[in-house]
Length: 115
Image 1 (tube, rainbow, N blue to C red):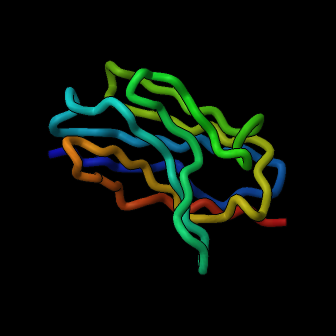
Image 2: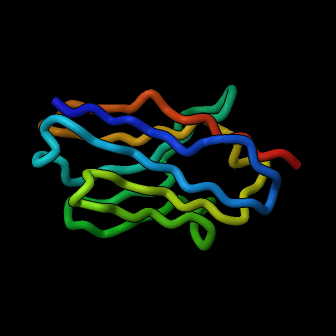
């Protein structure tokens, strides 16, 4: 099993930046693909950025050029650097991975961007 704990959310003005962290514990050796998702009120959860099984990064169109995902293997942590934030980025941000067909999610961290 894997446990994921996100942190780093908060309230920021439009144009500002935040850096989210997701620390994994447990069976971390089984983690390959992992990513960041978000869910805004009244909307479906969407994938924002992630690492594929091959270690390649991928981004949603809404995140390209503004968000950067990175990974610290030694600390079992992934990060999401978010720049040029917009009010529409307001959401709960989750990290998630899938191991042997089972999805694992963190509890989420709230990001609120004021206009």
